[in-house]
Length: 484
Image (cartoon, rainbow, N blue to C red):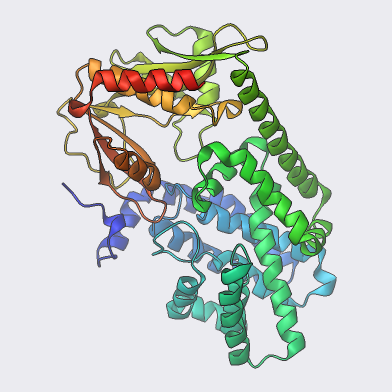
């Protein structure tokens, strides 16, 4: 089997490989029509307003986008700390700097700009969460970055110290280790006590800005997509996204109120209001989730699964709505998603609900798949069974937010495995987080990881259907249904 280059140290040819596979996106970026190109322009314009050199800023941002993308942290990266996060963090940090410009020097703004843009610059990281020590190594070893820093007369030790202050959560052992290195870096820079306090505050500003930037710049659907990716990065199970997101924001109000109030006072009301609306959205979503769980417990609503053979317009519209809940880059384009329903061998299983407050047999989730040959896999994935027509590919499962955490995903997956077995497939393949795959292997499921992806750990696995006992799967389905 071909080895996935993303799991190996970078050989000499890897940069060429990355540039070739990114060619279509690269063209849109250079033409100025990609999302990254548009926010780059906004960053450059805002930086120029703040007195930074526009050509220098454009060159630095272009460098960052290029490096993140060719190292696999660009448009195909299923993780939170990708290039879009870096650009959002940088733009939002500059918006804050604009509101606080009367308190900041031009040099301060240069530091804020570089710290926010490169705070996660760890292209060889083993997992999605940033490693500040690795970031320091790359900043010191990359000649281009060193030239950028020296050109505007900054001290690399101060910049790196600010990035260490973005470590999260900044408590306990994490804080102790970060502060030890920060003080060493401040010693190297020869800073006074007042200067140390000043740059620590700037680092804290960047830390808070990068954690709320996406939620202040996106609408509700974008905020939920971001939260799902953040859950992936922080190791949360997807079913606790709403609950943990609320805790995530509450900790800011409880433990970082001083900086949070400063940040929110510095940006226009549209960003403050959007952030607060999104926080309220998570609270309402979690409230609805708890209501659904209680209604299921009381037997007021029932969930069931159905293998679909015909697709009404209402069914297609429900499926498309649920499909749009998936975060990028997991979801297909709308027309491609609908076109897949035309294949004779497509297997679609829906999760439906009956209850006093729902439409009769309303679709609230689905799992879908078909012959492997119908699908384009993630870049870097090689499957030796493509062309043999013995493998069914399972697309990402989607369930409406209020029905997370009630085992609907288990019900759909077991039902899909059973039906795929009945249809004569030898293997089932799909993508899932490595920890999820490893848990299933530990439970005795006949699974192997066929292709690993670092650092997001969203791996491609193969399930051996020949080793599936239909009676065992039926029993698991019955157990899930009894628990609902």
